Image (tube, rainbow, N blue to C red):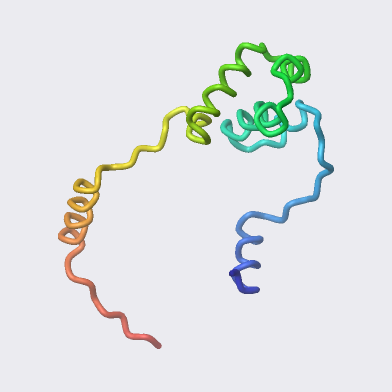
Amino acid sequence: MKTGGESERWEMSRGKRTKREQTQNWGQIEQYSLWPEQIQYELIRPCVLFHESVATRAQETGLPARTISRQVKHFDEQGMVSLFATPPQIAPPDLRHASTLDRGRRQGPRREIPCA
């Protein structure tokens, strides 16, 4: 849970967000989206969540129905990972362990820092 100070720091670092009216207008949604993955999800969201037809969504967005259909299929098969151009890579456990050990050797022993 964030304390008052943490919340204030977060707002200052991110800037104050202005409230927007919710919209179904694809042009505005595209404009408001910050990341390519977010745009891709917003494109398929009505089909995935509300079972809107792909043809209807294609008409709303002006994008080919085949493109939307393919993205919905990938999302159904792979989930959120399908939205990313390159899926996140997770190193095998033995490699992660070796990396942690190596990092410890490079940094040397930890020093104690006295508290004021």
